[in-house]
Image (cartoon, rainbow, N blue to C red; front, side):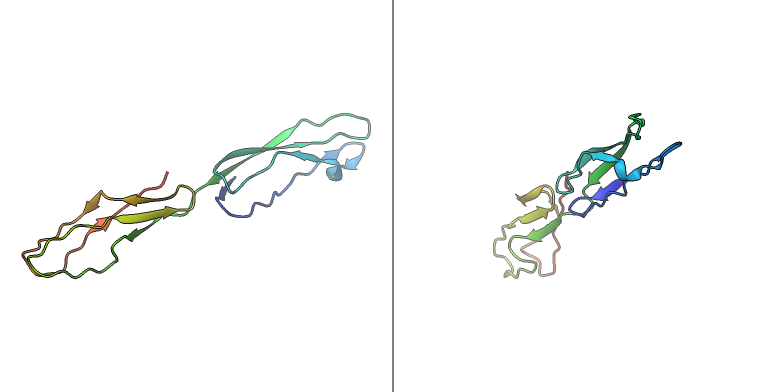
Length: 131
């Protein structure tokens, strides 16, 4: 089973039937926890014993918490910058934020360039790929 990082996980549980005691689902003991605040694989265990003391074969459920949210990138100097023709231009970089990896600053890499001698609109693009 795969769940999103930061989501609420509700275990669907298990059922148990015994050939003598019938439905013994209420006696199932669940072991393990799922922490959706941290990515990874979590194992839940289910154990039950009938009235005669016979243990059922333990069953497990694997729950994998994954990051399903893309990071965001924001230009440090703003999305629109106006400069006068012939003046110098220094790119300000960009900041990235991710729900799992945290945040940081990108000085490079970006695509695109600015020709300070030719009037026009220039597009610089930053990208960040989370872990």
